[in-house]
Image (tube, rainbow, N blue to C red; front, side, top):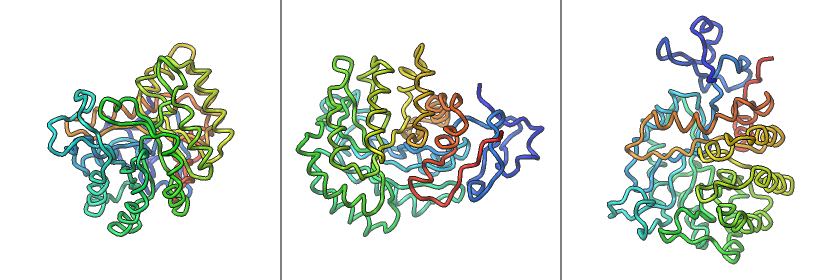
Length: 363
């Protein structure tokens, strides 16, 4: 059941912000996360998170919802902090295709285009009521040689504005029909230069790396394992907990065992729970909810929330709201400590060393 503020309680929670209408939920302001704030009442306030760490402001074809409109979507929800991802792999500029899944054979190629549009929009339209973190999404993990030079170009053009890398694709089976190739073990060895640069800058990197598929449950797992083994001191975020639409039948116990083993072995690894495939095919499946809640509670300092919303021009606030709710549904079952770490942003603030603080949960 979704939790909203009753109108009768508005006076006591003015620190949280203002309702736009008598029927709208009251959400906390950005400033309320500076220093100590009123405790978070889980019975009255939403279970949707205050941070969306996996949000694509730009789509594959470049024809996007306007930057300010996406920010307005966030302001109408509980989200006050977000990663500004582009999509690094774009369709050709002269293509009439808007969804690579419907255009097999059309290449989806790494590019800097979306990142520079996001940066220009941040300069011109930086919001006062949201904290946005720009991310570099251009990197081709199967051809890493140009990455360091491009990172330096980004810093020259937009000094001090980018603080994250990703989402970048180690292996994404959904794009195999669009000329994407998984990075090879030899490619991963060649990441050393840009991974060292990320460590110097203290930037996290979000990697999309499918564990396997319905025919072979762990087909691609060795690639992610190699990346972790070679670069254990990098802050890596494994997108979607390694799951994809090509893998909808992995047993929860096996999935959790893989993730637990790697989290235990690599202290800088984090997971994001973005993309509703996790809720639709894993978290909500009969018998799975308690298993995943137990896992998230146990590893609560290693989890980041995200919607994986893509700002295609034909999407709307209702679509964003639906994706945010679906990807957040499991959060309502977490214990208070895990809820604070994940939903209330404490993990995100700590990862980026931000001067913000998650409220404590009311007892």
